[in-house]
Image 1 (cartoon, one colour):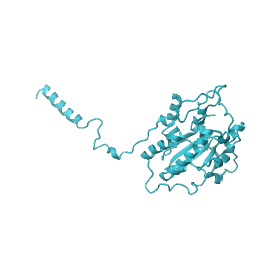
Image 2 (cartoon, rainbow, N blue to C red):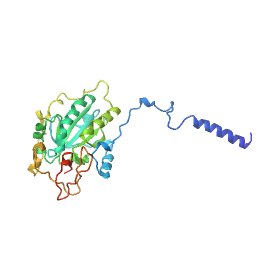
Image 3 (cartoon, one colour):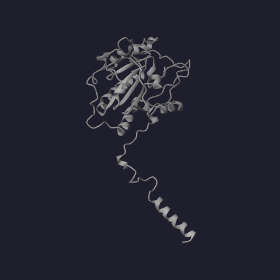
Image 4 (cartoon, rainbow, N blue to C red):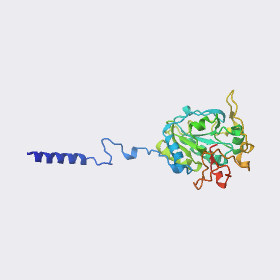
Length: 289
């Protein structure tokens, strides 16, 4: 066989070899069947309020990393430890006593805590340091049914880079942050997506829920020895439950996050300007103080 003939023969062999495995199609020898692969949850910006690009990027950089440690001064309800909650999906509700949208979201968060507990989902709150002196009273007046702790010097909010209030964070069974900054009305969607990837182990659904979890935290107060609740806010308007607060909210300092509309997903007027006044859209989300 001359040189040209050998080249043609090699080309034919190579074409058959490459054709045997079509790109994009599973190879029975190396690939797992598609039906056996669990769908991986992907974070969706639509779960959040409409925000500037830099805030989305800040949130996305925090994902798929180990959840930061919490710094809690005292608890209303059973104290929570992230290290002991591995194996469960965890929802942290970052809220504030002065935040009307946070108060308005509590009934739905109660429903989430109840309806998902048998799927291995644990819900608890972290109350903003400012105003946490009235945390216990607000928990009782709102009927909050999940444990909540007072943030110690805003250390937890800083560690989780809280952008607005309320601010929900979802942590997977491995202890990694998988969603952050999501809204109350999209929390179900995020949990369902993560449960599709990490369903509760057979025979363990709900077993890790403590017997006291179903009780109203307002009926059980656990204050750390030697520690006191952070002082109440300087503004009396912020020290009362928002449901009864008819006064104006404090405007944050310039450069703080904007207020976002929960239902319309539109940015509300920026309250950081000295002349800005609260609007009807302020009820949907509060700025980071």
